[in-house]
Image 1 (cartoon, rainbow, N blue to C red):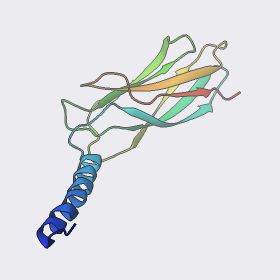
Image 2: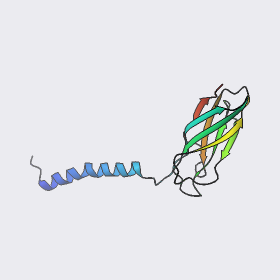
Image 3: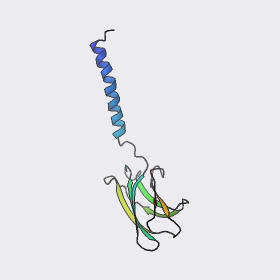
Image 4: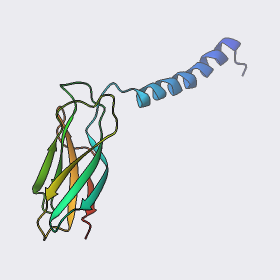
Length: 132
């Protein structure tokens, strides 16, 4: 079967268009998703006091859609403390914020989660052991 030059060009365009569409969809920041916790550094500062430095990633889109807090939870899901984020971080991604927190002596492991104003919770969380 002989394929015309015109058909060959059309056949070659389809994979090229598919690749272009896939690249655009994967790299487009059209929709900011949920806030993800990327990292946490915990330093024990006293018997029950810890300094939490938490790195959050979220494609903030302004005052109506930005990462607005992160929480420290115990093993049962109780909130031990919250760091409220007062403004969007559109030009600072990812960003790290810290807070000091008293943690009950029986707590050995904590989970850090972040929230954004539009989606609430649901992004990547980190569960880590407290340092001794």
